[in-house]
Length: 511
Image (cartoon, rainbow, N blue to C red; front, side):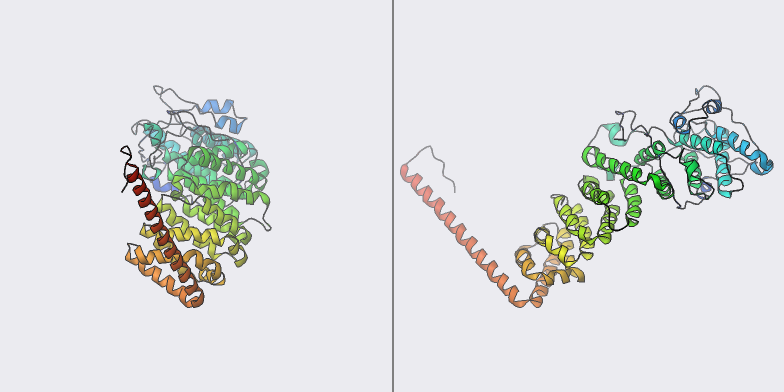
């Protein structure tokens, strides 16, 4: 719903909708590492590529009213025209009464966008803007004076102008190769990061500041702003996604009134990813935010949260690229089970529904997640799903891929799972026995063979009588299968004999 895609050559256009904040930490020192600078002695920071050249400070003054509206419009400067950046005094060099006005003037300088595709272009101006951004961050972080509402509006506007932009096409969009493996793609590194990083730091410091009044701030950090932030999660630059994750988490914590909107907006991203594109760079980061959110859910759990588990989280096991975010997804799933053990049956049946058929790497991941869920499972819930569950485990035991078979056998190293199996052995032994026997008789891998022997020995020690009963049933079944095969062979021979007697010259004999 809020993830528009413009056909190749452009890419996703940022959307609108904003929300709330909380308190994480990305130290203000992070952006300093990109190059040491002093005001008197300017150091040049080279980048490798560029966004647009841009934006005139005067245009910012004229449209000073609508913070988010202006944020989506990035003014541009004709490349042939030189961009002149005014040199302003430091905050400490002016009286306290003039600092708010100076802050505004510095914000307007930072609304100018530069072309980073040419590292030799506007070097001094780029560095001046970078130093100005660092000053703004330090000013906000110091809390030396409370910034006015007008200044907050202009600041969010400047941040919007800098960060909300069209993301470049992904590599598969450039080549038209829809089936490329996302794990093998090289991530795109944002060339304007020397400026973007400090802008993100400024936004983070503003959100977490104790001086930021949420009643005022929510006029600018609104739904539109949040939706645009969420659009940026599709950035291929992992540094940008890390900042976005931290900022969105803090917004969620600070602006409680908008929490349902943020959850719904993330849901929509997941739906589009699962059922339409199967392409998105920030699923892992969004799941990390949700892991923290789920951890804070109150009990009894709302129906809305259970629907989110069933409709969004469990289907996230379906995409081919699930391995990229499986660790975060598994954490979210286990958080639900920890909160409400009655969801175990829903989760396990969901895993079985999306169980991979030909992807062995995913099978190993699923088995690991299954063990984490079973570790939190109570006996009553286990009994509801144990038959289909152990049928699938039996198939995994007989997998010709030794890592799948080995991972399935490792389930018997977990004491809690062994306890559940022991309590329900009369049902589980008959389901799993045949798979164990087939492994011992014919599996090619020695390690799998040895682990299977250990599991069979465990069953024998657990209940010898039941083990022998399962053994007899298995032998009878094998004997019946052999007899049936012999009868089938005999039937074919009789048909061949009848065909030969009829002398049909047109008939084909099958040996």
